[in-house]
Image 1 (cartoon, rainbow, N blue to C red):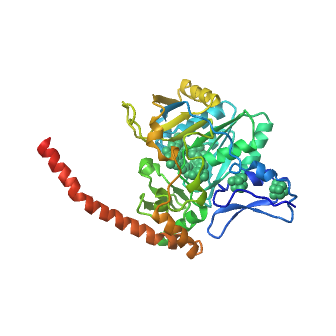
Image 2: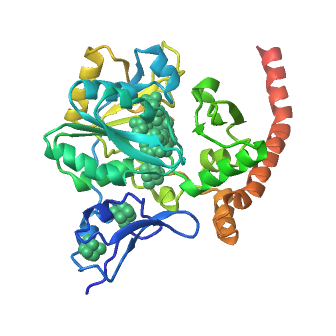
Image 3: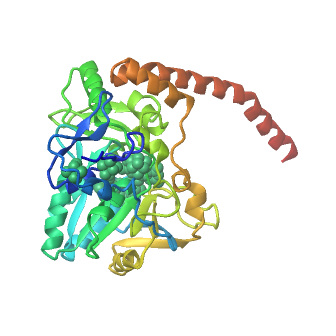
Length: 395
Ligand SMILES: Cc1cc2nc3c(=O)[nH]c(=O)nc-3n(C[C@H](O)[C@H](O)[C@H](O)COP(=O)(O)OP(=O)(O)OC[C@H]3O[C@@H](n4cnc5c(N)ncnc54)[C@H](O)[C@@H]3O)c2cc1C
Ligand code: SF4
Ligand code: SF4
Ligand code: SF4
């Protein structure tokens, strides 16, 4: 039998397209020693047909789309906007789609804190998709549901990460599938999140029932991670850098290796539409509205354009046209993947040394980072004072 060569482990996104396509079901998606989900082939059952290789979006990446228009956008429904990560555009897309007979697919957090993509067909089920879950999500079960919906001649909207959208483009060549990708800086393995929740819960003597990465109760723009117990009482609240998980996530220290080589973190996109937090608003033209809770919408295909026009004409979403170059100036992930810092390099060694123990691997690095930030603050203080004095004297 010929050797089967899937994507290199340092590039594999864990999308599962190879497993979904295997006619012998002999590929399973499994966690490795440090918690990263990768495909494993049962060579005893493999017939050497190479179908898995053909499905892989890394071995052959679908031709990307060039964005043609950029908008600052937000939901016309104030409550949806407050409880979404940024402008609440995603939930309005889902609501419009379901009202028009689409099946909607999005990321939902389960009771065990894993995140999976699910397919729903009624408006009641859409709330679970709202807000960002900053952890690896799997869309494996959704592939079969999407296939079924498309076979039944149903339209489907999928919102997810660009690597997942690329996988769907390899799996389904169907015009009834509307694909929306998020701008993405990386995902952290689920095992790190579970360990972190365990640690915070032990410290508080509680059992976690629910969590939020950008809790609306503390303003989603502040990226506050919170944990709630079985009675719905909140018992842990962690800020952006004051927490090992958040430090690992927001400072690009603890992602899957492939995220540092991501070929989807660029200007050309996999989705018909791209959405993100609007970074860099006002860089290329004045913006006469608040930059708080505003999403970016990029139109990448004719199908995407028609869908956004429906959203706007139906009054669900308010849009403000922006210069096309502006979001590309403001958002690094639209230019290049997350960059490996010295903290990341150290983490790579530490996580192996500690056998996948996330807290042990990252604790010292986070403390070092915080100490460095304090030094930077003190060192830059005289400069800040000098600038203020100069401004007062010179005007
Ligand atoms: C892992 C991740 C990284 C991101 N990185 C950036 C970034 O670097 N820059 C930036 O501007 N924006 C980033 N975003 C997007 C941003 O957080 C918002 O999701 C986006 O602005 C849309 O906001 P919204 O208010 O319209 O909708 P929201 O309610 O926030 O959007 C929810 C949508 O996000 C999807 N989703 C949530 N979690 C996941 C997940 N783990 N995997 C796949 N899909 C998920 C849901 O399916 C749903 O469709 C990221 C999102 C995620 C999930
Ligand atoms: S070569 Fe064919 S049978 Fe073997 S793992 Fe790939 S898809 Fe499955
Ligand atoms: S199809 Fe996805 S999971 Fe399979 S090897 Fe390629 S990138 Fe990895
Ligand atoms: S950075 Fe790229 S590879 Fe990593 S999760 Fe995001 S889209 Fe996927």
